[in-house]
Image (cartoon, rainbow, N blue to C red; front, side, top):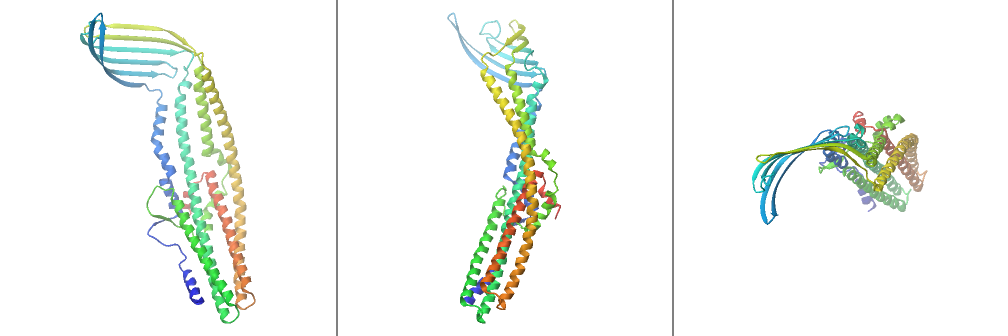
Length: 472
């Protein structure tokens, strides 16, 4: 019975590799490229691009006149001195308005009239006509500088630059998050390999223990215990295999594709990290001065300042020169012409709400300035901390890798002693467990280094896909 169980466990160790399917296998380079094309987060920005582009065009074309087509039909009923009249009118025309960089406003309206009740003739008489009006005004105190008139343009340009900067930030975030997701998948794969190696080692120990029991150098209990440990380790291998599939699914969940895909792991996590170490540990700290996070904070501050300057104009009194010309031409009635000009002054007395709005915008600008300073400081601190952490983790990984090699050699020596009866079963178990502990400790340090390097790529604004593509 023991031989049957042992043979079954040994055979189960043959099928340790993840199952191969017909799914398309993606290398890290292909996975990162696909994320740039099909990631949900980036696609959301792609959907918004047309609206953002139109908003920019509207702001930059502030100097263009607005033109509106108008038309209406109306029916009226009039009672006058016991006389009841019904008449209808129809009108169609254009209205245009234009404002110069010094605030001069020009409004033009022209329309064609048709119907009863037009001009000075009887209301029941039907005739056609034209109505033209021109209004010209010039502010003397308020909104009369090119800088103010172009504030909407600056706000639109800032909004577009913030959108572009957000896209750069999202690209960096997607690359970083995608790399970290692949690293989690690679770590799961690496852990599976560690557990599989341990299973093979335990199977070897179980075979030796079985042979030694036949030579009466081991007890049946030790054989049973060795077989039980093999069985338990098989469960660990199966669990590690499931974890690979779960991490793979999590990495692919950010893609909009419904195709069947799978990730192709590296031979080792160390191989994955080689290109990153060569690049990330050589980046100059001054790169932080051009990071999209800082640019975003600077643009937010500029926007707050522009909005504050716009609102402050509401406290300035209005003093306008104006001129209005209107002329109505009728088919049968006398024409009507009117010219009006003058000066108009106005000032809002109940303006407490305006003061409150300005103070709120001023506070928003001050907060944005503080956030800009904080972002600049935090970027440098984060980059410095990650650089230092990556440096010592790199050394720690090298030391732990050497310890793993020594532990594996020690296991072989201990197994040789066990074969000739110079070591007992329990001491071999301890050495075997020590190898596993050292491997897991090395893997944990390697994962920490990988995560630090992936985060460094975000702060260094590195094109991770290009790094791996150029190191094929």
